[in-house]
Image 1: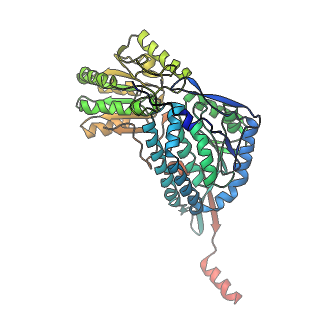
Image 2: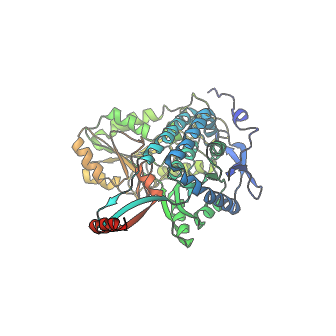
Image 3: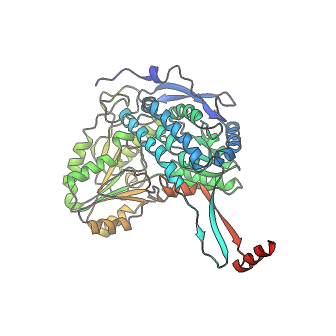
Length: 506
């Protein structure tokens, strides 16, 4: 396998990555920096600031001071900053994509598409915000009741590592266009593209409107518990989401928290499904060539009717085994490495668990031949004969592992599909649309595809049920979640009396 020259020298070496606080690119107050690791090679990559509680306090103070003027601009004024930001992001498309390939291991060709998708969101939020209206409520005769929407003030955003640039672009937007200011904490595993974006935010937005602080648990906890941050949004694991809820409650201040968490998503293949189409859907829905299966929306559980099981598993295993795994910045590869050694070992432990519990390993499960030494590479993996009680059937692996399960009856299928504590997405594959819609209604998931999988459409609410989170994103629902509703009541005088008073004054 030919590996292109390492692009680290061109895109990383010599670049000073700094945080953004109050319109300035800064180091942490402590001056501490941490070394990030290149998952493609396992070698040290770059130094980034290790922020702490003092940095969060400075960032929140800056955001709070900047918020009234930012809100006063209105949607039209704020949209100008969005337009300038879009221009800057487009100009730095290749830098952002390559930084993500180097820093988190996602294939560079897919990271370019991530930036393109993010630009669609930058363009989409302002007109949606401009269309937001209050209500006039006929609650009582002789009175006027209406609603007005007001921003919370300072919003805290904590993002995940699996789409670093895209999340650092898209996740702040709905809070910003609604008049809030922001303090964002990117994931420490892959923060380089977010710190490049700090430079672009600083050029496009007024000082203090966007603040980016890197670091670990201390930064996250300080942001969650700061009394001046009433609105929090998090994308990541269930365990961290539960901790955020708990710490927000313990802060002694009421906070509005939304969480987009994990998924153990079921792909249901009915007996009349087109097998070849379903195989391609399973491949696409696993996000192998986007994020190595490190996606909360991946259809990592495939439920196949017994009449199609043998044909489906044979064809899917053949397709999965075709994937070429190697350095993420080499465009001849389909799949890159996992994000870190720790996560690689975690995913490998699930593969070991599947083997120990009696699942049938149909393909993958090991390091690919010829992959660069030191990188965290794993071939896409497929298990068959998976039972409901196995860990690989119930726990989110967040990696390139598919668990295929067999079902015979309809209620049995529903029991399997709804048999976890997660409910982010699901998909149904059938030619019978009546069956598809009735099944979609009974699947306990926040987002259900019919004869499709893993695609997002701006304007459609995305989010999960149960432990997959609370709140909806990428839609008007998300915009409204960053606004508080205020009701204004006016007692109206009798029009005849009011008219007579006007005459008397003359």
